[in-house]
Amino acid sequence: MSSAIGRRPVVAIIGTCDTKLEAMVFIKHTITSGGKCEAIIIDIGSYEPSNSTEINISRRQILGKSSWDKVPSRGAAMKTMANALTRTLSRLHDEQSICGVIGAGGSGNTSVCTTAFRDALPIGFPKLMVSTMASGDVSHYVGETDITMMYSVVDIAGMNNILEIILGSAARAIAGMASDVVPTNTTSSRPAIAISMFGVTTPCVQIATKLIEDLGYAAVVFHATGAGGKAMERLILEGNFVGVLDLTTTELADELIGGVLTAGPLRLEAAAKAGIPQVVSVGALDMVNFGPSSTVPDKFKGRLFHEHNTSVTLMRTTRDECTQLGEILARKVDIAANGMSRVILPLRGISLIDVKDAPFYDAAADQALFLALKKGVRCPVVEVESDINDPTFAKEAVRLLHEMITSSAKSAGTGA
Image 1 (cartoon, rainbow, N blue to C red):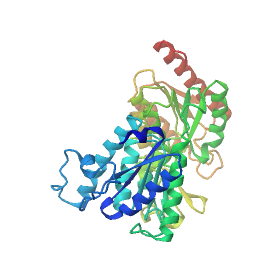
Image 2: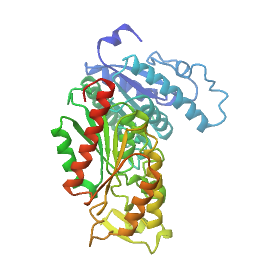
Image 3: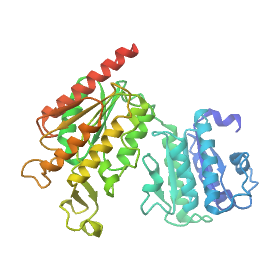
Image 4: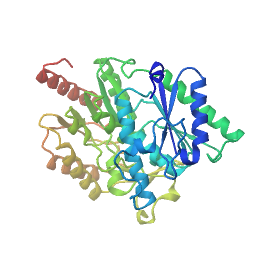
């Protein structure tokens, strides 16, 4: 890079310069003409390399010692390039050489760019992907991160008046994000606590949030929708929290039984790995999530369902499934070091619809969950004679976590 680049925030533009150089250059010139940012082009093409002087980081520099010619298939080639781009962006970020990234292209380019964006760059770092794939399901591109997806409307092949409008807007957007990055510590200097929530545990979390903030913490709530759980786990591992109030572990049910809101097999492991206190409960483990009723797999015919709304169908977990969930939760909680976990159980219902006279009320299933958990877990278990949304439960959960954080801070010789 030239020395001039260091004077203003730098945006990295990533694309296949063998086929889309004109578009990459257009984005670069649009960014720099705004006067707020500089821009560099990173080439991740797979055909004949371009020798354009507009390219700042070549394919050869990206790949390093990786041998592109010996890659056996296009799929393997894309993986090789994604890994190489991840290393490059991670280095540029660590060196504080870039303040934003933008990719533009089709499915291959989108896959490579978003993989690197997710793996190399933290949440909060500006990331924009202009893609021919952005009008459909983009969950596998975005994952648990804050990648902004923008539909290209037309193919990114050559330049035309429609593409100039789209890419111009994208270039100005990423320049705006990169030139006005808000430091992550400006919104609050208070230590933060992560909290998991679902619609059917919202009253509990609302009470817990107020109590946490009254104690001087910042409450960061994650919606347990699969991506929400993954995001919480990622941010825990990145060191953003002093404690976790994991009241809503419903994503474990979707992972076990096959619902649509799974957070993957590593859910409920980050706090233990990070070595921070956690209070864990069983919120919404009475349900598995599906889309509209017509999308529920045939193998579940005859089960108890509840239509949460026209887009969400809930299925009640059985006693056997609850037993398995209790065993899974116990194993995950026990990953934590001694004294860093507590389990809290609401004995009169684990969601808004699992209380007496509600659609999913099943005391026997709940009891199976509680017994399996208590039998398998080593850490202390606190039982509360209320449902999960009773203020009594929230108060006790917050008290337990605050006590653990304070004790942990004293042991480490620091303030909470």
